[in-house]
Image (cartoon, rainbow, N blue to C red; front, side):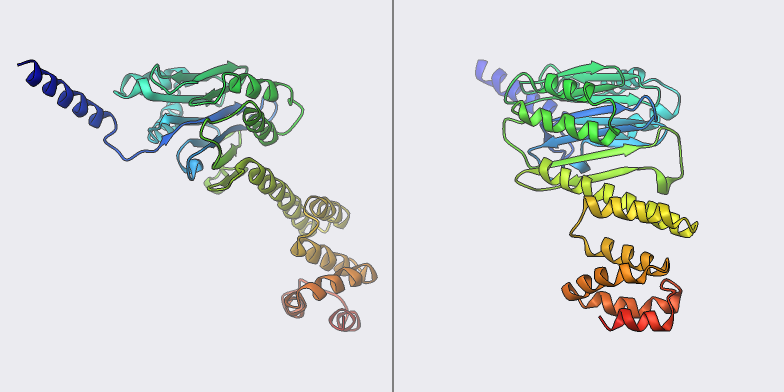
Length: 326
């Protein structure tokens, strides 16, 4: 009889377990941060984990609405559900309370939400694998589970607090890097991601100002740092292009120069800077740059041949011959 009772108990437990984990969701044990910039209103979420493509599971954000990190025995639906509830006017805490109350797996979830007003709500289930904890601060929350040591949240919080003068994405990245210095995930590193959205609702195509991730790398935070630098460089390139459209060549050249300083080996940045110089009647400055580019990759010379037809290279016939003779 005792044996049958034991079997029945085990079956019931497995049934309950299956109900909680009925979807094929990842076990994303990790550390993350949700945050808001008090000056710009931007909101962000950053994450690192020893789990492939963590950026597709943990971070969720929408311009003018909020940011969410859902992890541990992750339920990805927390992300879109939380954002939808925030849109109805509920605060971060009200949203989290509702989601947790409706979730039979609440004890193994770790979730953090920040809304557009800077309100923060965080839940760390009692059965999250230790070391599991969180710290809520002014306009941010840091949270972690399955950590090697017990100082990860403290390191993240301190790094974020001390970098108030920097852009939000940089502050989030510094917090993630600090977490790793404190020991990070007990299993090591694999993937990381950062999303930043504007503080006000905007067009869907402008919903994210930063959206970068590393799906699989031995040192994902170093790779994320590299990609973030590339992101900044191309921001300068875009601003330079906009300045060209407005015929503000001084600003355009300043933006292109800033881009090349961040990413000096990128031939495309060098190329468009040289073309802008040529269009600005500074062909003599453009020539050595173009020669260097052509020597490395002759395809850029072929592209140069195609630019006059679409008015992207507006030099004289004489100067065009000088350029193409390099």
